[in-house]
View 1 (cartoon, one colour):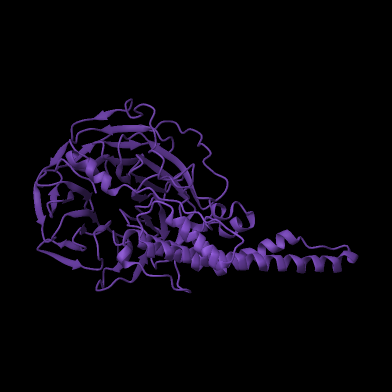
View 2 (tube, helix red, strand yellow):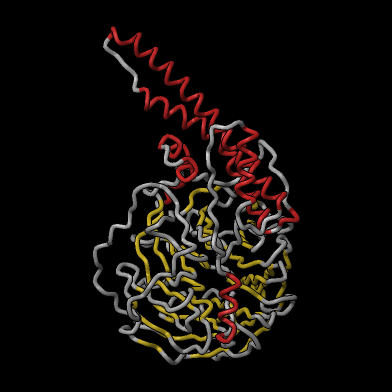
Length: 522
């Protein structure tokens, strides 16, 4: 999470993704026992910090995959012989069957069915073994898991195996439109204005907040009033005013005036193929000069909110824009009068640092998240009674909790789960989404209520409110985030980009999500 400027380096090192190690399997023509022994000898000859029992278990798991592929290969040969026989019978009638195409189709069906569970469980088991070896447990057949075998690397390029494991995400449904590069450090937050002209804002650990033209990717305004990391940015519901929270223990309210430049043709960012690549060895996006140096700079806020005794991690506007709420590492959230900058209420009760705060779009409700594994709902609808409800549905830090337009709250956590709650009955979640990586600041679309999940592992996934996975945003060697994705933000009405994400790779990305097509494939 963001820290004050003095401790930013250590916080970043803590959250950076460790380099992944690629594993390869060498095929031999020896018996299964000799092959297993050879594989173990190969591992023993390598420098490894894994216990021998874990290494042996890994080799057993890979051996199971190899046996599955051998069976598939044998079946494929038998199918080819049958097709050849059939072609001979049909030759008299002048007909034939494309044996290559039919066998590939058969192989796709059989390979997907028989290896998807085994290969996916392998990744889950391997991750558990490398992070917590004491909790390692061997694979159990028939249980679901998540993993995409990189068959090209394992088998040396057999195209019929590659085709069996292509991802199903349609690039026509989720397309990268624009990359917004200009910050000198990681980005914590991204937000889109609710007034015209529509611009996008980013908050960064480089002590600045930038406003961008969505269409051209040009920086329009640079705010430099903070003395610490800028941890969040939110726009006033009706005016050209921004609210930023910072590691300098303050939240600033500042006014901006922008003039949108003429749109430029969008560069073609489509890529061929579906193969994923590992970005762990690549550097963050390089910036040729300071692209924000030429844009107008705002240095003085119109108001500064200064009641906290620690890092202000987030801030948001209450409905109407006359009050603002802030969340801090001093374990409190504060409610301010925007016109006078006076503290109206101090919201206490969390046992550890706050991580996020969010306001309801139409009601005077506030939800705060904390490292104490809880989130709290504060009700200011009745001026004489300020009630609070505590919810304990997670087992690790609650990184964010957000309202939907209706009567739901969606919470995300470092425990790798996202939970959907009903405001009318929040004793237990109505849906739980389990993922393979910690979840950061989530966003829910207004119209179709699609949840965008930014992950520590650089992925962004889309789910519906019932927990059904809809898509994963494309990530390849030419597009996508290269470091942890910190935040997502929807802007459904924008014709060019309707989803934005930002992360530690110093960039924000604008996506075009074809929501009707996405829901049709559901």
